[in-house]
Every structure is written in C-alpha cells, then in structure tokens.
Length: 331
Image (cartoon, rainbow, N blue to C red):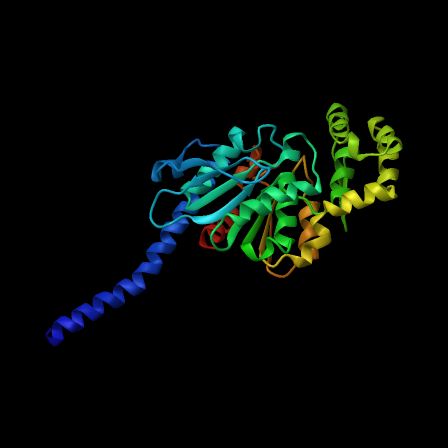
C-alpha cells in the first residue's frame, strides 16, 4: 500500500474514532428525549415507538413469582434491567407496568418484570424482596434496577442485600420511600415532615381503612383497632411509640436502615406534589446515602405520572428529567 493511501486510511480511522462517540451520544440524547416525551404524555405522541421496533415479551421461570422479560430489538444487545412495580393488582400484567417495560426495552434494555405478590394486594412484607433478588440473578452482568412508588422499597432492599448488591450498577427510585414508619404515618394521618419541610394531605378515609384491612394480620388487635378508627391523633401516637412487633416489621421494610450498604449509583426522582408518597422520603434517603446519589425533585411529575397544569412550562424540570434519563441510558 502506497504512503498516500496509508495516510488517507489513517485519517479515515481517526475520523471514525472521533465521530463515533459523538454519534452514539447523539443517539442516546435523542432516545432519552423520545422516551421522556412518550412517558410523560402516556404515548401521545408515541415518539420512541415510532423510532424503534416493538420488543419481544416472553415469560421466564422464577421461583415464587411470575416474571416477564421484554427483549430489546435494535442495534446491539439490550442492557440488563429489572423493573419493580408499585401497587398493581395485576402485577406484571398491569397495563401501566407493561407500557413502561415496553418503553424501557425500546430504549435499549432487556427488562425483567417480576410480580411482587404483596403489592398486588396493597401490602408489603420482607418476602417481597425475594422476587427482585431472583430476577437480578437471571441478568448477565450488573443490571439497572428501577423501583416505582412503594416498589422502590423491595428494589432498594435488594440492592443492599448481599445476594443482590454486586449485581446492580444503578438504582432508580421513582416516587419511592425511605422509612416505612414515616410513609405509614403519611397514609394514616396525611402528615409529612423532614427537617424544615412540613405539610399535610387529606386522604380518603375509605382508602385508609382498605389499607388497614389488607394488613390486618400484621397488626396486633389493639393497634388494628386504633388504625381502623381512622383517628389521626391516635394513629400518630401509635407510630410515635409502636409495639415491638410493629416496630420490627417497619424497620425490616425501611430502605433507610440499609442505605449505607447500597453500593450502586442511586438516582432519586420525586414529584414535589406527590399525593401518595411525600417527596420528603427522597430527601430522607438522599441524606442517609449522599455519596453517588442524585436527587431530582420536579413539578412535572405527580406521583409516578405526569402532573398537569403549569408544571409543563417548567423547562428546568424537563431538562433535569432528560439528564436523568440520559444518564440511565448511558449507564
């Protein structure tokens, strides 16, 4: 090969080396924006879907939990991800869960979605961590782990568990909680507080009673009677000094207790106007595990869905969410 040809070939290779990362970053930026638009608008417009192939959905065998895998179809292999749903009576078959899993697969992930048994019935127990750890064990290499709403509890606990912590690279908590006692206080009394942030939300008493009935077997008769009465002050006094069994149960379900054991990067996204889990829970968790933790508080998101009203005009919130999605896709 003549010297001028070698020089031209060398120049071409150098150009590709320089351009390839730019093209890759541009594609990731485009997909992050397309994902965000489709997620926030509930598919109207379906921007990411128009750019990508529909993923393949198939069941995978996991002990004790039905699990689906959404396989990415596009350039390159899908990166491993486990999605932990929130309260969803149909578990992995909930249409909202399916939509999000499909979007994540279109964005470049192979998404495992286990059904969390307790969260199909409005309750949560230590055993609900097991399907998450089992799903992580099926992933090749380290996985991204996403916990939605109260599903962030099992996700974060699995990320701290010795059986799962080395299998996780990034944990994203969307509208999740840190302290089971404080989120229970919020559900029963409407009050939330962390440092100088305080507030109150009026909850439907019927919803409170439904929650208490769903968890009745975890409560001693005296505690159950207090909570079923829907007396805010009595419930607050009970949570200030809970019986030992209730205290142990709440401690077991609290990611706050094991936050320091999480080795993965942590991304906490929370709506300031969240009506189901107050954003003070993400403040609490970020303070407990500040290293390699990103906290994103926005008005664009209510609980785990887009909020209406003037929040859409908040460009800063939109940019923060885009940066979070971009970081997730680049992980």
